[in-house]
Image (cartoon, rainbow, N blue to C red; front, side, top):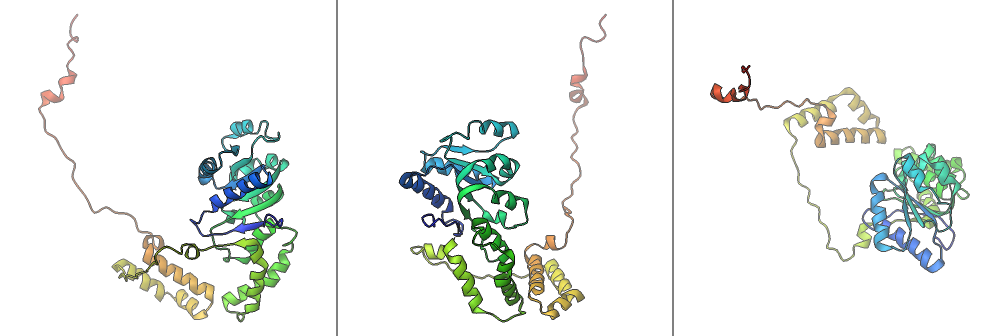
Length: 311
């Protein structure tokens, strides 16, 4: 994708090394193509340290700027960062890059890499609009979350990668989102050609591997389903929910999304009954206070002052 000047999404399942693959890409660009950046990597705050440690472990030759701290500390980090070769990699969080977006927007970046790219799935959000205007030569999105949940969220990611290719939100919606939504909800028949057309459009820009495809030498996993009876309270909540008139109407309507919502409520009864119906915590344990009987002289020993009463 890099050689063809394409931006893309690395969407491997969790645990397959998206971080290491990204580091190896930047190392390859530096060593083989003399492209030392600067590159901007935007990650959730909780994994900033992890990214820094991985870079220092595998590519100690890179100059890393981990951009964090209060306003005064961040201002100190920006001193001299416009000079050539001031740093190679800048790692920061989504929150800080939005707060200091004017400074980031003025700098020219080689690669913009977004970890947990589902954070920009809403094209109407301020975060999406600001990041879209950054000066970058190429962009790479990392996500372990499946992208088929919402096609308009997928368009947000694709437009962010290549605005000139995925220009029209309206056209994408007419071509893919509306027909697919109709298929999911059962309002229209399954159309295999639309699915194939969507795959054909996305395949050049999307790399997704599954663990089952990668772990060829691992032994097979076996699932054992152990049936577990509901408790007395869970059975009461379950039957009560199913006997409600609103639940019966929903099931009778046959609307797929509404029926799925009912299933989710029943699942909540099984897994988290206290979230389904709040129950105050009352401890059954009760104990009277413990009393100690001791000699009064021992209790009053510190009350005696030998200096009192002396003139």
